[in-house]
Length: 106
Image (cartoon, rainbow, N blue to C red; front, side, top):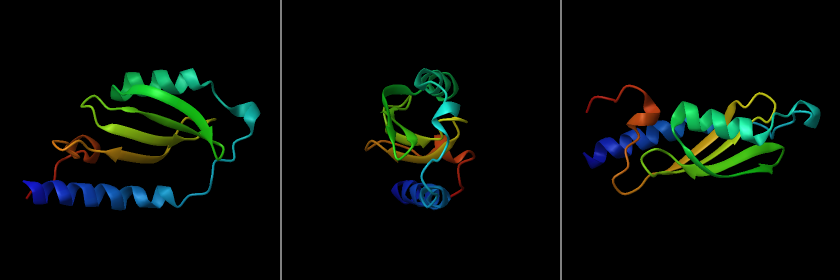
C-alpha cells in the first residue's frame, strides 16, 4: 500500500509542477475579488477549513486544512480565483486519491 501512496504522490507532484513554473500573478488590483469570496469558494467546493489568506507575489496565498486534516497551501489568481499552485502535506495516514480523481490500479 505504501508504494501505491508514493506513486500517487509522485503523479500529483508531476501534474502540478507545470503550474509551479508559471509566472507570478499579474491581475490589476482593481479586478481583484475579495478574499472572503475565495474562502467561501473553497469551503463550499472542497470542504477546506481556511486558516489564512494573504497576498504573496500578487497572488492570494491560502493556508488551511482539507476535510481529512491534511495541510493545504494554495495560490489563486485574485481576479478569477483560479487555482495556480497546490501543495498538500499529507498526514501519515494521508491519501492522494481525493486529489487524483480515479485511483490508479496497483
